[in-house]
Length: 149
Image 1 (cartoon, rainbow, N blue to C red):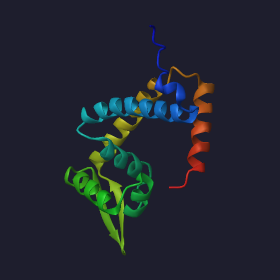
Image 2: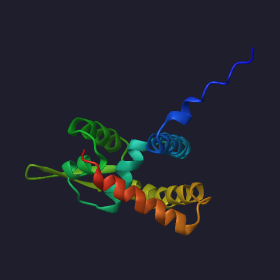
Image 3: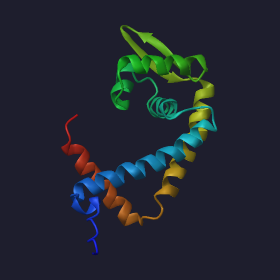
Image 4: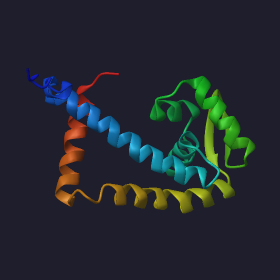
């Protein structure tokens, strides 16, 4: 007696679920490559994110940074403490607000690493044409704006 093959589980999934799973897989692969790049420079993803955000908007408040990175005030305090110890950022008290700036060393790292990280991401997305990259961006932006945190 021959058995009929079982339907593969993925054939029962909706396209939305398959797209989400694929998006998570692609993100994980890119994140792993990025993490390797950051580690080679003595950073991790969270440290790089702080460096990139503060470098792009010197003087931003600690609260603005926490909101931009979608992390808690406690997490941002820990991150900033570590980067302060490493001589990459400074916190300046203005009233009840901590304003953030990069040190000279932090600025040098920002100018070295941010363009290289952007080039890495561009290389990883290079299999998509420019038009496809624009369409992907449009679709992700549409989805992002429809989701309430």
